[in-house]
Image (cartoon, rainbow, N blue to C red):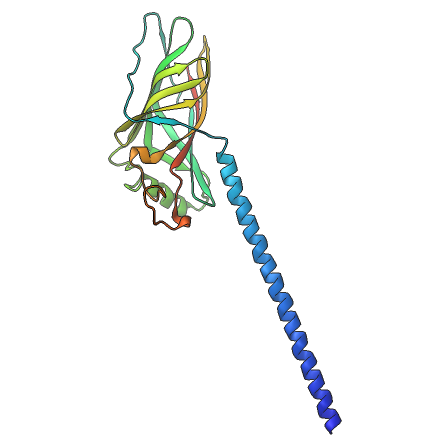
Length: 245
């Protein structure tokens, strides 16, 4: 009888230690899975900022600069609203949203020697659209938030504007007055410009600090006590493809 009890006790101890070993192995696998997931998130964050690193940050100067008048012999080309495109991108720590916004009117001026020397554009803030959120309800919620007083107050300020003030042919830098929410500051950014008899094409990729125009929602530089996950980058990136004919 004692031998049987001893055998049963030995078996029970063996089962116990086997269960403990399996539990430990399961825990180690779970930890490994969590670690790999964390590494994936970290890589995703790095990729987001690496993509943004190629975007030139516009130089912002307080207030507006003088807009040049059309010289004698200059030509005016109307912006082709169908072929022109303005895209935006906004970022948080681990992800970003992107979309489009319409240019509703605009024209550029070319002097007698074929150089772009001015232009002005109207941006339809009511046309803000998101391209990366597939769920219709969530998409509408995001766009509604962008249109709200937290961001661009579209109901009160339905348009934004940009007017060229200077172009440096040597460096390709373009300066202009950017008006958002009735606040105007001069921004300078690089652009690729081509002028021909058929018209003008221009491409630019840059970001600007939204807080300079009073768009302060969840800015880490404005609200110092925000949890990191809630911080939204101050920089809004814009990609512009402009065609004027």
